[in-house]
Image (cartoon, rainbow, N blue to C red; front, side):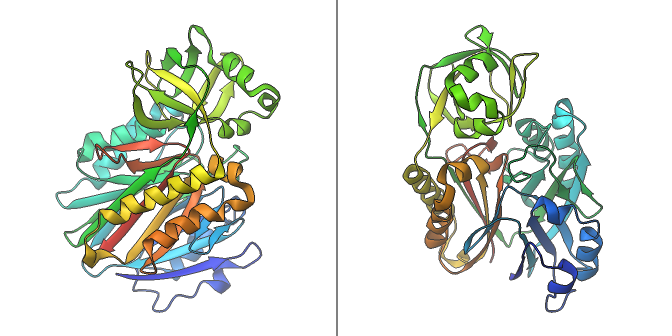
Length: 381
């Protein structure tokens, strides 16, 4: 595997500054950048002319991740060339939350194949049910294929996000990359570091990722009471207080949900992923130290899944914008914790997102996470 990376600053011109050696030698180019970069009309044709033989995929972010830490307002371009593996991309426009599952299934049908080894997914960050997208994908490719990635961001504005595919830069689509071949090795890790507080509440009415009632009361009313003065800043302030999912026996299921939007008329919360009706939720909060420890644990889990001969390649880090808000100036600490665990053999790219996609540590089922650091390692042996 060969990897080449270029980091473009806020005021740099992509066409002039992206000059890879041997532009025809690359199979996949991942592009993560600010809304300003993705709003540039010439982004896609410039990438296509620079990497004529490569599949293209990426999204706008709430902050870009490199081995040196957070880059806000930049564009990180990472080109990968494989020795034996192959890649294929697919994209599908999702018109509204209700179409998330069928959109995921369409991506799955486009990527399904006997030697499909893994999938990366980059979805629009708003008006989507990330859990349903994953369920749709799994229905077509089967439960044994690892899926990871994340939902696009727009710097925390929650107004308009972008994804990039071979065909277009769009605010509607989900883009997926399929990896094929026996030479590929994947490692995955995800962990939060948040702590619960307050009473446990029963989900008495929900529809997918729309939470209508807790304990028979409008969910938005309860949530606003907890937030107090912070309620005026919803939905962005909701990133500071995510919800932990519990099953009907009050046991943890290992998933957190964050708020992407609110509906005052319906009294509901719009979450990044689905919740279970008659299950339970409770609020969470976190300290910087606990979040850094969670990132460290995610990195150790991912590297532990690779054999000794596969300790170099690509590291995709997808973390939540809520963690960025909590840690503030200390945000680089969680990235450094991951980089230190991985060592110098991995080229790091990634972004701060509105939802993280990664297999569960115990069941290996791909899930939509919130408020986690997720690490996906890709190597070729």
